[in-house]
Amino acid sequence: MHGGGLLACTPTTTSTPAVSAPRFAVDGAVPERTTLEQGWDDATRRAFWFAPQGSRIMPYVWFAWLEQPDSQALFRSTAYMSMLGYLPATEGLDNPAGLPIGFTTETDAKSGEAFLGLTCAACHTNQIDYRGTRYLIEGAPTLANFVLFYDRLTSALEQTSADDARFARFAERVAGASSGCEAAALRERLRGLTADAVARREANALPAHYPEDFTSYARLDAFGNIQNAASVFAINEPGNGHAPVAPVSYPFLWSTHQSDVVQWNASAPNTPVIGPLVRNMGEVVGVFGNLRIKPTPWWQRLWGHDLSYHSTINIPQLGRLEAWVSTLRSPEWPAEFPQPDPALVAEGEAHYERACAMCHEVIPRDRELAPYVSVKTLVAVVRTDPATAEAALKNIARTGLLEGHKSKVLAGEPFGPTARSIDIAVNGVAGVAVAHLREAARAGVEGERASGESLVQLAKRFEEDVAQAVTSRRFSTRPVR
Ligand code: HEC
Ligand code: HEC
Image (cartoon, rainbow, N blue to C red; front, side):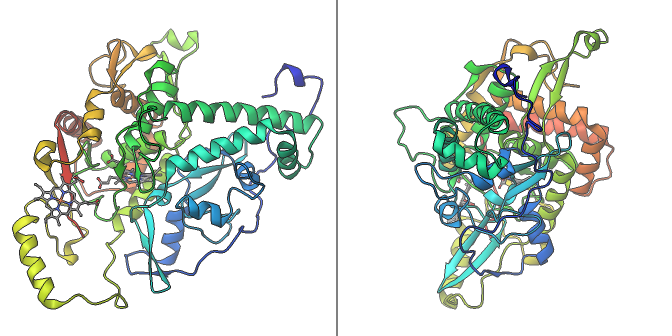
């Protein structure tokens, strides 16, 4: 892990010696919040906020001590993270550095090192303030600015590796020494991680003529990020990048598990057992899941096994996260909120019945956890911004080392020299799932949507569902609650 220049040194460790993350005091104030009845007890809420999913941004202690760009204040301070739109949370064993909801710690099984990652709750939790009371809404769309977060994080890393005084403070806190072998090894590793972050930021940068805040608070081109993670970084084809110019609003999560299909462009069938797991694995690919597809060593190629799929995706955890989502209920209007005028409610109901219900089905609260079929509307009919639907169809990438291999690893047509960027991500997810078939099958069943079919039948159905979903320019309409 340490390069030639350091060989004269024999540091006792080259990685940060944090076997499990040490505890730090939360840096700032965490507001008191009120929760609403949504089908989750307190333990489930907290588990959903901090259950890691195999996302690896950087060593956890690094983030704990990283300073904000152009300031000596800590990046993780509640004021700074709130400015970026994330919701401060109290520290605990599951949240040792007092990070916001959705910022996790996970110990790498191989190195024993604790890493910082993101989980679902960072992007799918929100808070409504009313007369001084803060209502936490589980599964609600975040208002956070992920792009700004990553941009600032990368600047902080750049400044810490380049500036001697800043690095000395960092090294003293992280490794207990600001000079000598430990510090030199730390700096080299920091430079490597910084270079990776810069490359990721560049690949996901907007074209120069776009306004700087095009992807800003409350919207993100999740698919664009996933496509680049797979088609640029996983297969090491730097020319494959497509600027993520199709930001969408973050959706709410209640009743997503029950829909036949999800994602704004109706591209992700919820085929039982397989659908949700594949979609969640795809999400981790975009959220620091470190997907890498590599040629295998020559002796493995002798028996026809010539690609290997690696990632840090935590498949069993994805099963649990999905199982929790499947029990999440929509929030009810709090009694403390102003009560709606009954005459207007009646008028609104009639209007909704006329103008909305044909697309946004009304589902009574007692049937909230039952499966339903979402209405799919052609983009041209709903006249929404078509960018996200178009990008999935039009972004093309070189397949590189995947050329000639089955597009879905065990199934599908072989890849030609180019393919849709999204199909490269799908290939990556399939490859990781096949490499961990037992774990994947178990995780899929954990987040189960009742079905009596065998895994083989389900896989076949999933393939048909996907083929149908991706080629149609539709938008999915979920019940609005
Ligand atoms: C970095 C932010 C981020 C994280 C982390 C994240 N999501 Fe999302 N999620 C999004 C965005 C943005 C979309 C909308 C994408 C689209 O449809 O184009 C989305 C879409 C979805 C949808 C589709 C909803 C619908 O209405 O069609 C589901 C379901 C979902 N996410 C579940 C999850 C789960 C479960 C996790 C964790 C395992 C997770 N997400 C993690 C940002 C995130
Ligand atoms: C022809 C079908 C159709 C009709 C009719 C329709 N919608 Fe929609 N609606 C959609 C689709 C598709 C989306 C998702 C794509 C988008 O954002 O444009 C959507 C999105 C929405 C959203 C955003 C949901 C979110 O989580 O961000 C709201 C709110 C909404 N509609 C409310 C309404 C209301 C209220 C009416 C009636 C006055 C209505 N819609 C009529 C198809 C329809």
